[in-house]
Image (cartoon, rainbow, N blue to C red; front, side, top):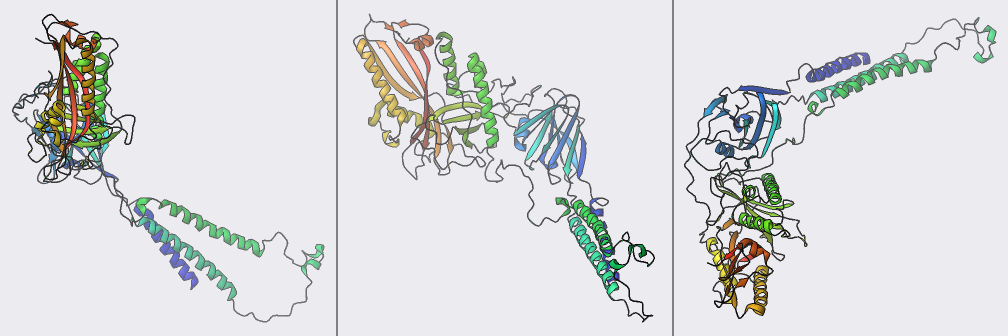
Length: 628
């Protein structure tokens, strides 16, 4: 009976092992599925909709092939990509109502020119018609641009390029799309292939092979037990003729051993026979090990725990009541690096036009003034480089339209020797690049508000006339300027927190020291006066989670030196900076020097009360001239 069970175990083991191996060989499914798309419109841009990319679960491998020349691909939020393409004709690959992949030509939308005027006092090049970094017009018009290259746009989350054929693996959600092009002039790739991985796992292959191996081992055991039982259960022997008494084997003479039929030493012993049985056992054991190794892959076993599927980093907020943040943290790092690189090149060449491609407002005008001074004063230092690492805080505006704003804090957390830098960057429209408009150092004793929204949520842009704040952003600069001019006598002094306001102390000490120095030689022939006023650049504020706001404003400080009698002449002895900007070393009417201040404040809401707190500041000379 043991032999019967052994044979049954062997047969069942063969069936199980064969079934397990067949699942991983003969019956295994395809590893991927793919679709080929042909776009024959000959247009310079192709948009592959996120709905197509996510029509099959899993990562996407996109291959784009062109007849010749470069192949360019970039991906970003679908709303951003379509906005960038809104003024041109392009081919869109999308899904129809039945879920089939279709291609269609999208005609440009007639966009009205922007009615928003450039900021008052902004330098040339800040208007909507500025030339962007790639040399194309950034003006929002109804005209279709010719040959606009998408490479380098700040809208993209990532971009790739190759010659002839480009293959890249993506993991995009349905809210993102891919833009394909050549150089913006030549036709975009006409042959596309999208490949998705398929789940061809066989979770029962491993268990079947293991179960078969166990049954095989059980069959071997039953077979051996059957042999043992057969040997021990032989029936009783009939009595035969009594055999003569034999001598012990070792007492038989060697010469008589053969004659007496003694088994020679060359005949295998019972131990040797048992050794052969071991060899018989080793053969199925090796076979079993080989079979087990064939099933030792993750796809051959059931996954009992939650599967770890790669997914893209959250970059947008999927909430109907809130717009998505303007950029991701990765985008912000890349944009800031681009700004720093361009400004560094402009600083070396003292090229104001190049700086204007990435700077605007007070930051640009201060840089241009520095370039002018350095062209006339050899040892005048350049302004500090734009810092990029490490990025502590990214606070993007949550807004789907334009213009868009980002606020960042760059610097080592807890660093005491170098103050972190706070900056504001603005993008006017989908085709222009982000420009740095405000830049300042955080005050040593200032604490950035803890209620700042994470970069994945973003913040709302505070209207300049917001009535919910302790002071409207558009009135903040003038109110603080009045405090600088009148001190405690200002009607606004109670609104501002004096403790920790290093800038106010610095301005007061600087004015007192300079006035004392001037009065030592010019008190009887001239006068030196100081004044502060709201700057020419608009305030920018982003809301915090506590219903307050971080607001950036500009101030203009003016020093006026003029004679007090008709015979006196004001000379700029030992002041090459003002002389370089004014273009002369003396004047009978006097000189006026303007300094640009960039200030960041935390403004609480009216309901909570409190005081407005200075967070950071920067001050640089802006201009100088003869009083007319």
